[in-house]
Length: 129
Image (cartoon, rainbow, N blue to C red; front, side):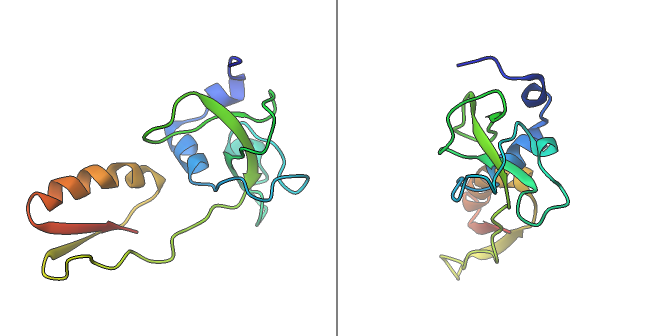
């Protein structure tokens, strides 16, 4: 693919992780302007404040962004939108286990599977919110 523009290269890991969590790109079009990072979006808007993956766009310098998180590689196309938040932690799958609630953000979401695997080996069930 094309080399990332300077704005995409300057995206921090936290910004990129947040961009990855920004949504699937549904509803792209004039109401979702293209972006390289959160700085490209209208941070005061209720609907276009977060830069996230938009598979409906054709690649261009205006929408070239780097997606963060496990299993992502290279750059993708992005547009500004609103982030989808989880409303509550998932219900325990094993109520007889000790329960651990991990509260965090897009960075801790990436660590949650590792924390959960470690706690599971000690008979503790974890959930993230």
